[in-house]
Length: 66
Image (cartoon, rainbow, N blue to C red; front, side, top):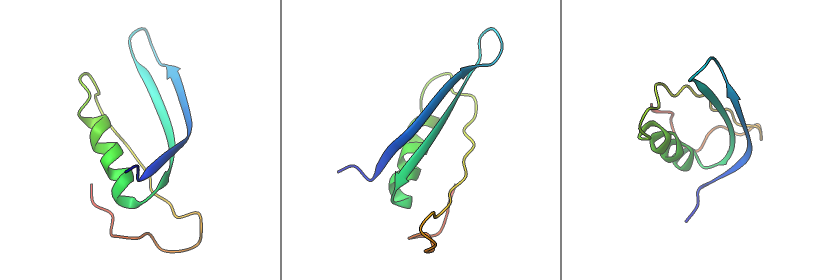
C-alpha cells in the first residue's frame, strides 16, 4: 500500500562527486517518513533534510518525528 506520491523530483550535481535530490511528496505523514527513512538507509547518502507542510490548510495527520 503506497502512502505517498512523488509529485516532483530534481537531481543536480554539486561539485565533482556530489549530487542533490529534491523530492516533492504527497501523502500521509507516516508514508512520507517511511520514504525519508528509506532514503537515509541508502549507502553513501550523507544527509537528509526535509520540511513537511500541509497544503490543504488542515493540520498534519500526526505529530512530526524525525
